[in-house]
Image (cartoon, rainbow, N blue to C red):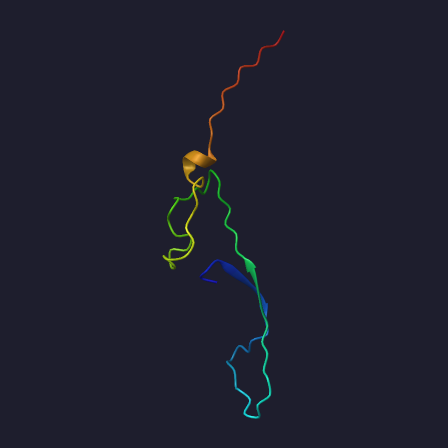
Length: 81
């Protein structure tokens, strides 16, 4: 989860695992999905900064996520005849 994934489901025991002593295989499934963070005028980011501040060596915000990249002033002149 610190690397940007979200837990969907798992069958890992909540109270820990007691390993079998008889040599049988124990299997646990963990399903993850990519986490998403919307970026827009109300929540711009700083390119080059870590997406997750708790993981400074993890992925960084890319160029184009700063406030000037996600906002634009448009001026239009409309002429009616």
